[in-house]
Amino acid sequence: MNRRNVFFIAIALCFALLGILFGLRQSAQQNAGKPASTQLLRTILPDANGAPQALSQWAGKTLLVNFWAPWCAPCVQEMPELSALQTEIGTSNIQFIGIGIDSAENISRFAAGLKVAYPLYVAGLPGVELSAQFGNRTGGLPFTVLIGPDGRVIKTYLGRLNMAELRTDLSMPDSSVAKHRLADARR
Image (cartoon, rainbow, N blue to C red; front, top):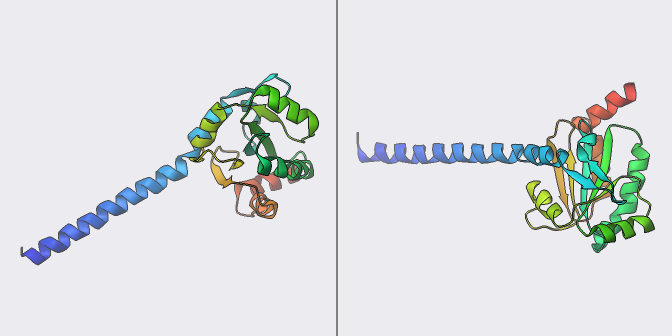
């Protein structure tokens, strides 16, 4: 075997190794949301009134989880639109929930002043870690996660939501969200 063949074999092995590593990384990223959604559904958080609530009550539904804070201007700006969209969707298999990154007192006071059509929960600073499990490495708010009924993360959004984009994501014909909406409509 000459040097040239050894060189090409070494290059081929390097590319094969890189391909394997890239494939494993992609697979890990695609599956990263499921453990986070499992952890989310195992969590018990107080609601805006201080009553403990098991988030497992939302298991099997498509969830739009919005991490927010009362001091976050973009969070507060998008809440009336999210509330209107939740009202419009109604009793379909899609549920919005808000997870507040602040004190119980601040979230309770905020919730009393703004009527929201979806449940608000108090996570405090541990909510930052929960959002990081979904991929929010910077801790930025608002941070929103669309989770399918199977627990798979469909999409994440950092920053103020674009409602037209969100509506599209909730109604994509090939998404699990749309399939479950169609199944609900047939019932």
